[in-house]
Image 1 (cartoon, rainbow, N blue to C red):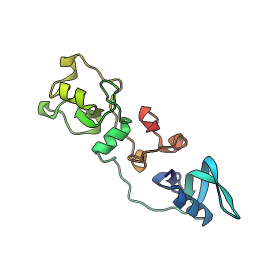
Image 2 (cartoon, helix red, strand yellow):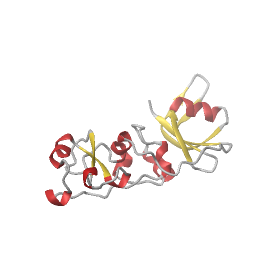
Image 3 (cartoon, rainbow, N blue to C red):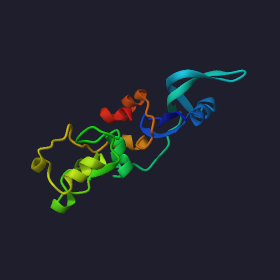
Image 4 (cartoon, rainbow, N blue to C red):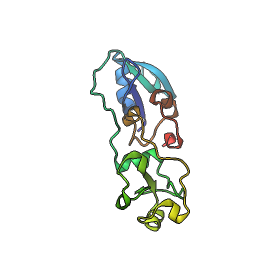
Length: 170
């Protein structure tokens, strides 16, 4: 099922909700439609645009998370399930600088990798293999925590997330 990005009254991303919940929020006047997706939702007496982004009418106080937690799923989502070394479909994560060689378990040292490349690399450095990364691994901004793990990200969400990359297409 498609989803809609929910923004706080201050336009901060909060979460992604199913399309049905977004429509209920708009119809109950608890949220305002910011961006419509493709298509219309029709009932016997009502027709509304399918919401893609909604903004809550009232501010909701939420605990601020300074960092996105580092998880396997988050790394795979950030890298769009593509191997950082060969571009094939990735199903594992790899430490660019191996932990056995002093590398840390942080966003900037972890990339998605296919099983073949991960096995070939082992605990070696990229320079030892003559490999290089297409782009440096980055730590996602806190706003992206709202949509990490959401399989179908709408391109209309990008202006509200502050994150544009190859992984944004998800």
